[in-house]
Image (cartoon, rainbow, N blue to C red; front, side, top):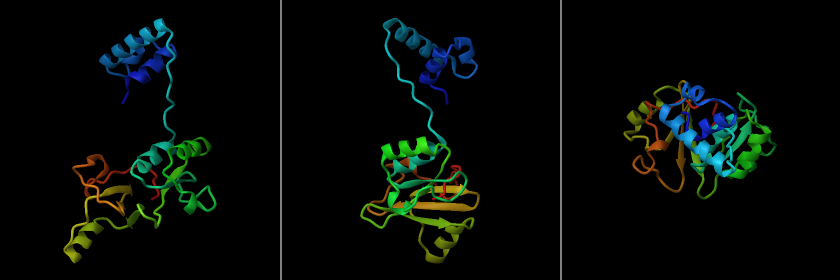
Length: 186
């Protein structure tokens, strides 16, 4: 979705307000034009944020959930790094550095056996959760679930706390509405 900052960037690049209205809502363009004109008159420097790389767009939502990640060769599960299992991190600065080095990289989540770590349960069979629930009589708990490709679910659970749907609704997916998030290789 196009926001005010994006439109201001287009204006700085020489696009007209009319051109911007082809891609953004009129009220967003109007606000951007007002801010752009104000910034121009006051000679205020405006920082331009670069759009996230493919790697960042996959890694950042994971590290925000305390899931350590590493970069992988694009569209594979092959790590760029030696000793990747010890280099997986949730450090934003390291993610930004890797994004510069490997902008198109795939992402791997790494479960570490340490306090505060996560565990990952990968299922390669559609509707497997129904079979587990039927055989055990227990429901798989609400947690962060990703559909990495059709028929594959990845269940991520924090080892030290249970995240609830009410506390973090954006983090959770039901088994039925798990979302495809690209080439995540968790």
